[in-house]
Image 1 (tube, rainbow, N blue to C red):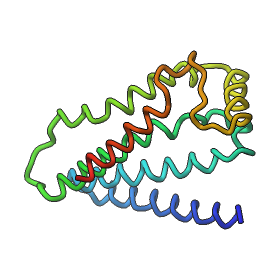
Image 2: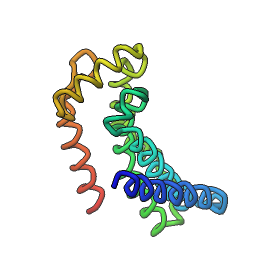
Image 3: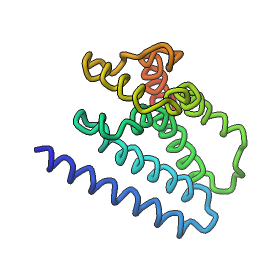
Image 4: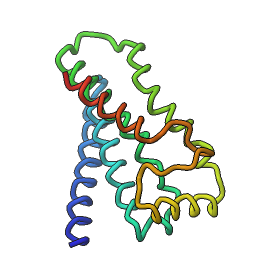
Length: 163
């Protein structure tokens, strides 16, 4: 069953990368097309990293731990901006929209200490996660905000940008 799921994920990864490359090449300076390309690339990247987020692979590839969570912050604003500039192509890019990337950058900055730590420390954190089975278990030396608050904020962003 795992092989079937891996094949399906690889299928979606391939087509997400293919669509993002196609849109980047054929975008010809059209902002909405380039935003769609960035959106598909982000989805492909999240799916690719998700392949390494299985329990048997986490200890082999500890560098992929805590990488997906900040990327999820990019999906709602990228989708919103792609559709916004698709329906209003005459508008120029508003630089205030870059503020929508702040939650993603904040969570990367929050996890920077973990990203820069030694392999042993990363493996210890992963073992703590695997032993408890709780995705929201964290050590306060690496994360400042409870991961559950990040989840609530991401869900809020999805609903906010959907409306």
